[in-house]
Image (cartoon, rainbow, N blue to C red; front, side, top):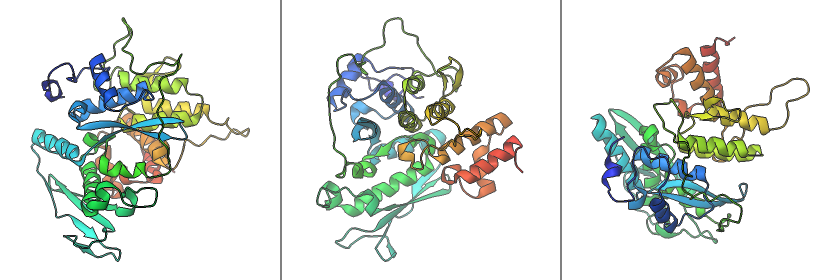
Length: 371
């Protein structure tokens, strides 16, 4: 971790070893529009993400945006940045690694499937394609206009989506391509252009104050509270432990799914936490086990409850999420240090683009249970 965040100076500076938001930082975050419905786990995950990406929330490089979720019955907060934030992270990584970095020409596609390198029509393009070049490798992504456009109640395109639709969908494609090229550095944070459609009509947004008897997520840690540190996967991190504690108190599988989603976005599933039984376990494994524990009882014939939670990754750990987690655990146990390279060599695509069956097949190979 560099000292760039610290160099911003003053009481708002985020320290690399910081585990909680300070009182001054919390005050400014409140004033930025984060309501009291935010959970302690979401705040901890946001702090971890700011430290990992080195984007400064007080310089408006990264935000925590709340959107009402009917299933959760409250606002669910998602980290968000602009395309410029993505570019800052990419250039910072390249400067530190000494790699090469660039782009191919942006392309736009019309409704008939024809591509061009300049969009001159008055109507919006059907899609845009951006290719990022990192150290000689090509990372291409296509964004469909219909999947990202922001609209009002009557379907009218809003804001820049109405004024500059070609530029907006190109930013979405660029964000997708940059996230492919820099998966670790950009995991868990999405751009404003990508998330604009989340505000389309359909979900109402509500704000409420913390009610009497509820815990205040902004409260500073109590004096004498245990301090936590993360040391390259050893020991426990406070943000990860907050997610684990939230899951421990959950009473439904749906609530655990929500925690898994937030922890996955924050990149904390591999952190070690103290579980319900006070044992040490990786956060991802604990959340999966906790969700199964709260699910329907096992069938009377001794069958096993499927580990799949939902198919939509936006709602929690998908079948592929579970399969990837099990594959990485098997690789670690087998001492395979270049799992991603071996997987892509065997199946012709990265793990992040693979399906659950392929990952399970490799898991069986690594554990010696393949037929």
